[in-house]
Image (cartoon, rainbow, N blue to C red):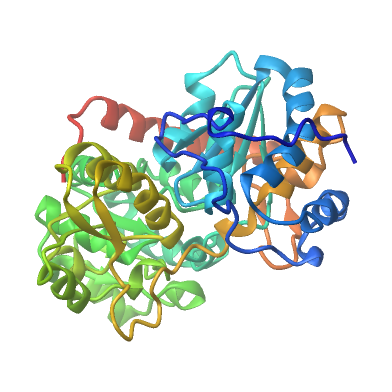
Length: 450
């Protein structure tokens, strides 16, 4: 074990990051410890040390982390970029910025290698598809690493390439170049490559309206993969009527398209893959009514069901939700937020500084799912970050944590399927087309304000 620096940590030692998130003395920075057997073999020594710490307060955890991370940062130098998504558990989003990293939404995370061509190493604490998106746009001299490769996304798990490919083959056989794929960022590189090869694009929740408007202007049918709820909400935003939308099942059933279903799809403009986010489908219109009757403004993520988004005061991406509460609403406002629980808890802590009260939308009497967080994203924690950086410092970064285009990792076993170099190049080339089309459309349009 490395020798910790002096354990005295004061508020002055815990800087505020660009996100506005602060670490405060005496406030625990970790929600839940992971069992030791959830760590890959190379990480277990670090996890044992972490689990043996007296508590999870900054005064205890930060000296331990500093003892490894400070030397690693000094050794690796300015080549390194640390990244995390807003949905990460409080322990990571409150720590990454301490070490010079950045917290962002999936759109900005995906662009990091392009925005920083001078950087060599990108270490991300988020889900696998987010790290892979960086690798798809990375240059040949840039490397992308993920702190926990088994950190996945339930929505993406219901839209694996081998599930979607049979449906696409049937649809492309019938409609040819009259159909394209729009792939939500919450997909593997292989699905993004399908979008690129079809002349489509990638989208995120922050730019889905602009991407869908562009796709409609092409006069082609759209297969939107994977989130059915974001698809319906964006369809309403851009004016696609409900009777021009066809819903496919998620998983293996989505590929079972018979002749009768094809006749129905003939009349559709938008075909939705049936995946959904378990975190966002807990919200109900009754939750909106409950908080609005008590004087709260209601803002939600567009992965929520259409009947929730349609009655909310506003809807938008994680970046929109954060900025709306922290920068736009007046001091003293009360806001109910419908999105991932870790995000809402972090937002609530920070909003108190402006005398803004933030509650989780599902936190109502009798609500069984109140405060639900993304369990798979929370598989990243301080030991994962410490271990990977320390191993990279020594040139021993585990190959499993390296992220290359086309990688597929089983979220339970950790088994990784990696393409040969030719396959990686093919996936990267096609997926890059879809990502670059997204960036072209997004950077050339006005920011969304919903």
